Image 1 (spheres, rainbow, N blue to C red):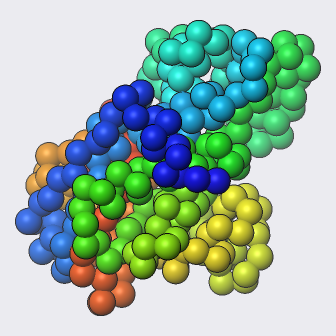
Image 2 (image 1 turned 90 degrees about the horizontal axis):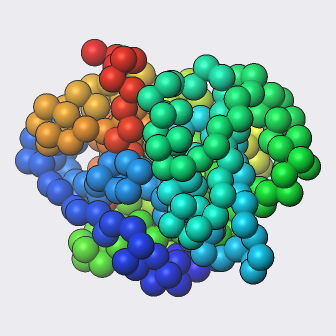
Length: 287
């Protein structure tokens, strides 16, 4: 997996998102924060990086791709497929926000609704792959997706020389895994932010083994220094501050990284914070 090669492959196909600073957030966090604004990326999140890289690396002859997603990856894959002239199907939980379903359709995806359970997603995806012959595209646990997501760190390190640390949220682990690979030989420390209520990655890191589905392979175990947990209250505080003071609309998962940046070790002075996305369901805001 090579995030640097992915960055070259993606050049001109996605946005090179800006770096912004905010004095108020620096004071709040007690350190200098360089905000990597993936909320301003195509489709509103970093996911377009991995989706586009994976589509560009498909074997010849593939005409139809399929994935299971409740939102951001589905939108990203739909756009990446459309730009490559491919058909795209997304298996979506039937209780996913209507605004996200509309966005996926708007980018050209055909939606197949499933029961809102892990088994429902898996079984429906399996049925659709068998029925259509489409190429399945994992949303995070695939080397081409991981290296594509890592291109965000390649850009960040080019844009802000001298960073000592980078932090991003961890869910499936594709983003932080790619970032860790990009930073592996740079001396830049890598941290992941995670909610207390969904801390599989923190428990996996502590145990040294993979628990459920928190990270791709062993990248997080070997190359992420620590997983920093934050409360729901800390996430909401960070999200409100970012909206009010930095004037940046970010989604809760992006606020996880910002909230965790405040809790990094004291010797982390110059920190890159990946604001992973800005796809907010306005009807479900916590404030």
